[in-house]
Length: 269
Ligand code: NAD
Image (cartoon, rainbow, N blue to C red):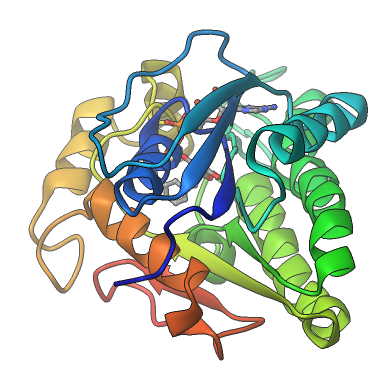
């Protein structure tokens, strides 16, 4: 009912977590999907006779030449690019100042700054720029930027990640003004606390727990607690994927320049 059959869709960071769920949902809707990820291992998808086609492209979203080649390849395989979902992202928790320990590995430094900004901000601009070249030429297309509730609310121990997602929200607003008149819609999606994904590694949990002065167990309890959100649970990956597919469709044709949160009522957005 979304009319996505035969559409050409790029999903970055689609080897795991939200990106994989988004790619699967587009395939279910009959769209042709380029699954792009740094991870060299091709992920498995459920494919049936109504699914679209899937190609896997080993792509580093921070590498301009690599991104150019990816978009070229998608155009060769699927004829065009109708939708790009800028989903690839990383998160390295840190404190601005660690007053408990000198030379702390959990204090923000240039290395952490560059890594997070490179993937979460530069990656989004490079991929959007290459996809836009195709979209603007034909006067149609949709760019969907994966943000986070941290980008809307700020987050203890995740300031650089939150700043990067705020930059993404700003891209969404600014590009909507630049590209809207050329027929290209730009929207953002800001998930809140979700069921576990690849982003939530043990190293990530240890770092975040340290920055919040709690144990990893306490942090995990927080994710599971029924008081975490007004809906009393964390979100499902499919709930983010459903929204992304709706936003990519003509049914969402007048939604433009905004970031919509999927956070169980925790943030108002
Ligand atoms: P994930 O780690 O499961 O998936 C991210 C994917 O991106 C991985 O497959 C990884 O290999 C890929 N990736 C990383 N760097 C890349 C690069 N340079 N080029 C190409 N691919 C790269 O994470 P996730 O939780 O599914 O997160 C996906 C997106 O959703 C991120 O942008 C994240 O910030 C956002 N998000 C996640 C949550 C959550 O609770 N998990 C909440 C809010 C927002």
